[in-house]
Image (cartoon, rainbow, N blue to C red; front, side, top):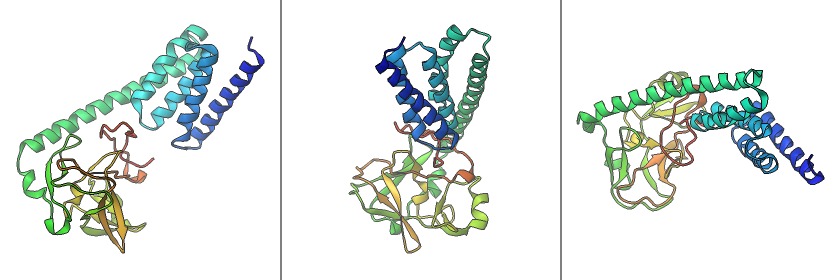
Length: 276
């Protein structure tokens, strides 16, 4: 039996869990995680780490992580929840079956993701082994306010690097290229990653007449950002950038361009290059 204080704590945990589930169903990207984790902490405090209430919240948390493409965290939540549910509910309970199905689909998706990433790395390695990329991957010095260079990146293929210190809040290079209307940009973004939005109708395709700014790689913790003014776009520093440091942008791909997985390695990586 729970004491009065413990009962109030349990009721609070249930409210947090249910609120998280409602917001998850509504498609909110961030708040469900905080609510689920708060509910989980309260339930663990009351019942210990191996209680069925803990397993239920872990299961929902796994579904939430999976919906965001955070597959490793989803797997960890499912795998922690499964033995608790099997012990408390029995191996034939339908809820155990549902969890096993979710876990199997997740593992299948993880396998596909790993194979896709392996293919991407192999393709990039083949491209980088041929020095011909150096002929086209260049910086237009007339468009750059600071000395920049292009070289192999730890994130993907090649990237743009500072060749001198760059102070914070400075325009580094203008993003140039062909202006493309909304009528055509969705078809282009299916196979290119050089599109930069100007407004709701126009974007710049840096693969045609680009200044070299289009070569900046994506990172979920960028040190640069796009700066718009009077129909033009610049890459500007968010903080001081040291010589040899790679310049990085948050691409924030539109959702209707198709989901693109992110492997930037940042602690806060959201799992996709697309905006949440």
